Length: 121
Image (cartoon, rainbow, N blue to C red; front, side, top):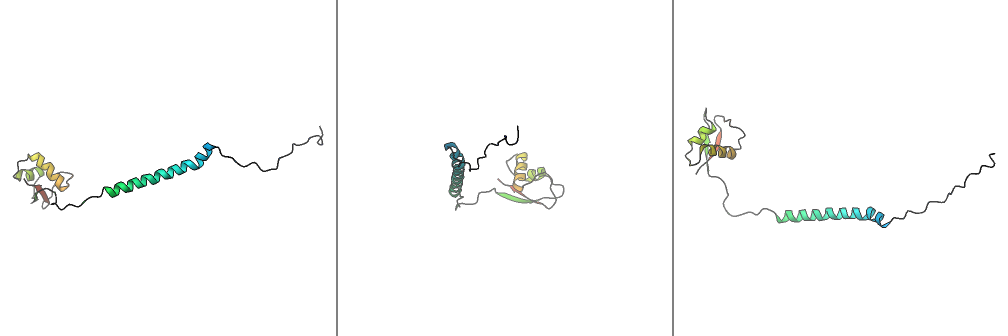
């Protein structure tokens, strides 16, 4: 074969036809993002409404709390000795738990001069 006999197929230089979206394609391109935006807007509105409805209401009643006395820790005092020194009908172990909770104690270490709130009956 000679080079004259080889003919190349003509190249179509016309632009490709426009892309046509199917119904499913339009839904994926337009519908899903719109649904996502709508869902986020509804969730935001719901959270805003619930936060406005659940605001704390001030009351005119007395302040709830525990009736307590202040005890100053002496040298060698422990939670057990402080709890045992209080005149109460509660068991000493229960009082120790109440004293620790009332004063935010993480351990049983006390320092002389420390002031503790001790519940009263």
